[in-house]
Image (cartoon, rainbow, N blue to C red; front, side):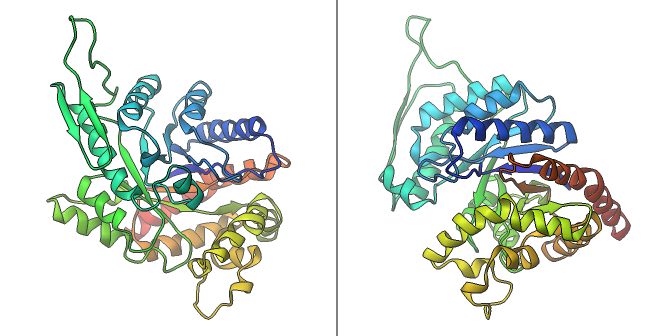
Length: 360
């Protein structure tokens, strides 16, 4: 199992944008130095707690500060971009990254983003149509016209031997493509399997992932493919410290707990999604607090405790390729978070690998 980062990126709204971006770049650099394999950066437009409408700009800066880590938008929300324009930006960034690039795609799920772009009922269809166009632009050389339900694109002929299509991705036929699925029994996961895309799952409670991999496999079978669990990425909230008590304190009272307390829990309650966090349906919504999440949903504790919890998690889900650590803004007190990144990479993951080898 590999270890990566997933940056929403999450920052308190009162923080200025520049300071938040520098924290994100610092975390990616630390991940690179610690051997994290990849970092994904989210894209949002109307979420003050996630102030990044252009993950590719952060990626371009992060490339100059890192050496081995692979970087990816997580995700470019395709209904909000013209596919011809985005296909060229992605191809160009792939050349800048020289192979250290993956593409994450999404349909968009924030209601105010969907309203901003006026795609509230059509976003998923638009995503798949846009992706089909992008792949054609990357893989086809001959001129073509595309007249779809949502997009119109012309691949022109070469003009006077000088002007015409020329920019293809550095990685052939295109960078690896991942798609995020945040709802249970998601049709997006079935499409990921059918199209050969890397599936990414957010884990919110012990039963949330039930059926996720089965959906990927079913989609793959429908297209004559064989799904590979090494492609599956799962996002988790993790905090590691020298002791369980210290880890609990920094998780609940630090930036992780603060963001849930002030933003995510109220939002999920507003949309009646609090059940997604519960380990039992008998739990009252009012009892779902950062303290509850630290006990039942997040993976928090000393290296030995976190190793044990991750072993139990893998036993339940089955093997998957990459654990993606959700990140938070601890810039006011960076050392505990930086230490957590190091303990997870240097103490937890080696023990987890040894345990898997013994069980195998």
